[in-house]
Length: 160
Image (cartoon, rainbow, N blue to C red; front, side, top):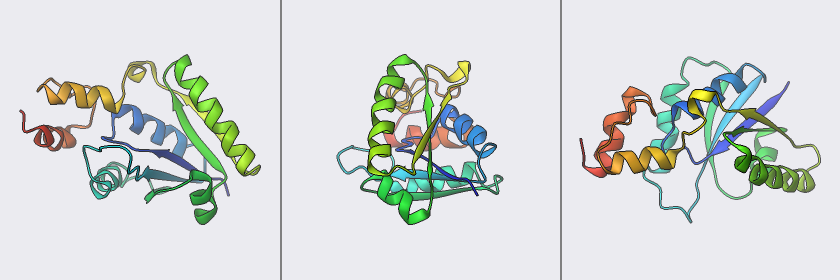
């Protein structure tokens, strides 16, 4: 059984994230969306809110579960018995960073493999940072995130 994890902060989850989740779930037997609790980041949404949002978006995907973690990804992978990391790549600049992380994870645990999925062209520019930037000024984010999350995001900035 191929069990993979798609880790990230997902703050907030975007159409680009959902595209990677959907495509990865078709490749592996089980996909865990691992929501990182990164205490060094000032998150827009709480860990619980991010887990809830992704759970809501993946409820019709029977082989996808959502879990939160902190600490090293390779340690969490041992806990959940996963051996594959899924990462999305938007541009060449993403690859340089992601390759270093993949190699470091493989050094830590030689059973861990990383697979890279390239972003669908329509999402190649999209990041959670862009969503937050637009939302903070009341900009239109309907092309970036699922409709059910738009009001929740605006509420964080008290904008409409």
